[in-house]
Length: 274
Image (cartoon, rainbow, N blue to C red; front, side, top):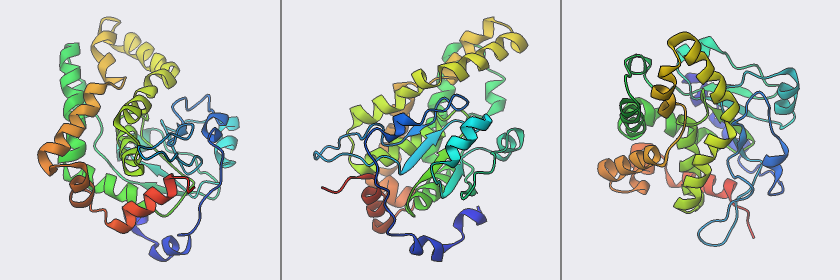
């Protein structure tokens, strides 16, 4: 975490940097080897007050096991940071490749506990597990520290990329928070969150094939709820926010420790100024 917290002077130095992009920039860059890579702003989502989001600022992804061609495409964005939300075990298994010009940062958020994964016996058990995972995004100190740190880092300015393993849960929650901060409505946030299921179909099929090979085909259906996103999971996190913090503003301020300056900067970065 020390690397992520260092460099306050660098943050102030880059404070005014705002990329100028067109709404479809995120769609122009698709990565075959990281199929859940996309622009957080989508095609330039509309906000509740009639503005639209700025593309080319923040990107999200699954893990970066990249082909040479895709590594070159990532390098062409001009990223200033690649933010890894995975556990040390996940990082050691598949380390991120170095991206020229980008600082590698690590914030360890709680993902799906492998010890609970190994004990799953039914789809119902898997859904309960996923609901619990999303509640821990809100209730666990370690996750709040990680998510607060990521959002403070992103407030420095883009372009930056953040990711976890599948790019769906930890990454999906950060994306949902960013869209909320920017003023996007809940139906759009949910639709963007669920887009993972379509975008990550190829990588999910590979995982399902590995489950069938090593654990048996009967367990593919058992594990399937852990391989996708569902509205229920996101609702579990929002409900935990309301239960433990009262509202989203209190969660962002008191739970994640984000002040008006950070929240205002994120909003400024994400929104196109008329």
